[in-house]
Length: 283
Ligand code: DGL
Image (cartoon, rainbow, N blue to C red; front, side, top):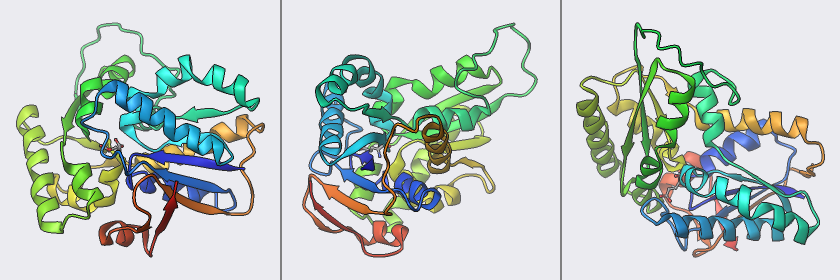
């Protein structure tokens, strides 16, 4: 038994790395849907179907619990799958399978509040607005999930989501530092213009972007705090497993990496982030 970690491609490795560091004994199987990446420009229906197929593959590989290490899948597909698919899936498999996302823990980290908390709207005057930029895929931006959910909890935080089309594809393809910096600087400039000043904090709301976090840091105003989605997800998974001992997660420290794309070594950008060579097997 193992925990499944799913992303459209290599971006979810940023979350996987944090989970493995936190739970070194746990078995993990990572699945990258590289045959269909990137997801960020796809329709909602496509994202739901591809995410479902990824979960099925990981359930077949023996995982009971799957973490969607992908903002796009978490924003677009997770609720649909939990409501309309997982109950039947559990009956068919006869196992308590479940799928968790990464947006809830990220919003908890950004607001400093538990998910259950929804602010009472008292219409108090907000003295100082905290401006939070969220860099994400076009699909995540269109869902407005970060704006909606943060606004329910914190009236003193204003969210500006900045879609970054092509950035995940560039990272997936191992683009060079100069081209990546140009793209990131343009997105930072664009959100800064929309806000009218630099953001106070930022979320790298696409797991691919964590791989180039240093490039974002260099493009943002020096010292801009970044909310760390991988650590927030590791906190949430640990808390979830403590409450749900029924999930068998293995204890051999096994690591498997599957891809729907072409197996083999990953590009240098990803391997540098990972700190070593990283080979995938065919999913
Ligand atoms: N890494 C993903 C995310 O967090 C998906 C990027 C993509 O496939 O467009 O949204």
